[in-house]
Amino acid sequence: MAADAEVLIDRRRLRRKLSLWRVLGIGGLIVAVGAIGYRARAGSELFGLSAAPSQIARISIGGFIAGSESTSNLIKRVGEASAVKGVVVSISSPGGTTTGSEELYRNLRTLAEKKPIVAFVDGTAASGAYITAIAADHIVARETSLVGSIGVLFQYPEVSGLLDKVGVKMESIKSSPLKAEPSGFTPTSPEAKAALAAVVSDTYGWFKELVAERRHMSADELAKVADGRVFSGRQSVPLKLVDELGAERQAVAWLEKEKGVAKDLPVKDWKPTSASGFKLWSALGSSAALVGLDDLAGRLRAIGSEAESYVGGGLLVLWRPAP
Image (cartoon, rainbow, N blue to C red; front, side, top):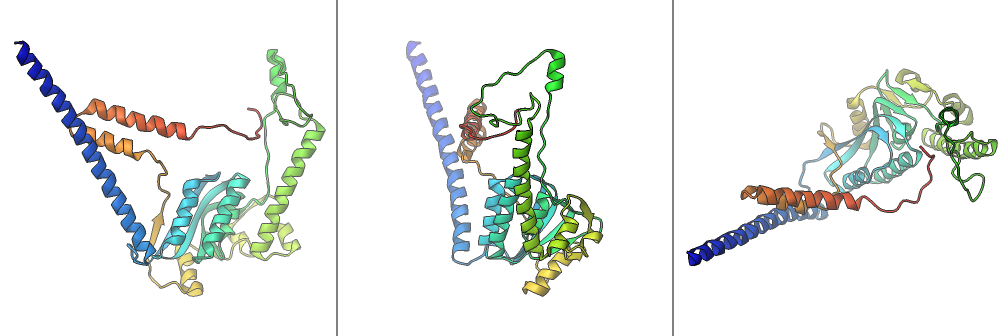
């Protein structure tokens, strides 16, 4: 009986080892196939053998603009794709941060050195999103689109009155009076307000200079549109904020007529791809699930998720108003 038990144990150990090697083998195969596919696609672009037919790329910019590595990489990929003959930047955004908007503008201007770009305001191109629009050499907007909002905003809460009512007082020790201002826990001093106003004014000047340069506006023309308001598409044409009213087909027609892009090319959506470097764990987890090792599959996927979350961490050196 003891011998039979030992044989049974040995068989179980062997089965576990075989299962583990199956998981590793299938996972390795998945990774290898993915790597071969990636290299084949990269190689075709490198040698000018496009894996896709000629097309116009559509890059959609929507929501809050805050700077995005995935969007930057997307714009770079579009610039390197030999199949892309022109680009439509489709915009529907209220704007975002100044740095995020500047980054997007610079990336699009770099792309414009390689591909002709036209902007299409599908809904709203306000503030930072208008900075995105002027990165293109031609802007098309719908008649009822909202355009403009040329200006800079800095907002923060001031809750000292509320804290007084509940009997809470915030103490702070600062190296200088303007450090960490505004705090929101105490009334903002005139000196702090003046310092913040200077930052807003400087950035506002940068914004106006950009608009004047890209839209070829005189000082008087700029003054009419740079007071922070938005304009409809119909209002925007005579104000030189946009060039033409219409839909995406008018934007494509401009590429064909003015930039020599071939007619009737398909317009294809280009979207950001995941930048995660921990897909191997997910692949191994899927492999384990295929051979029935559900518990191991869950553990492998959990390891990948945990490792990915740690990569996003790190020390921060930044200034921001206290919440």
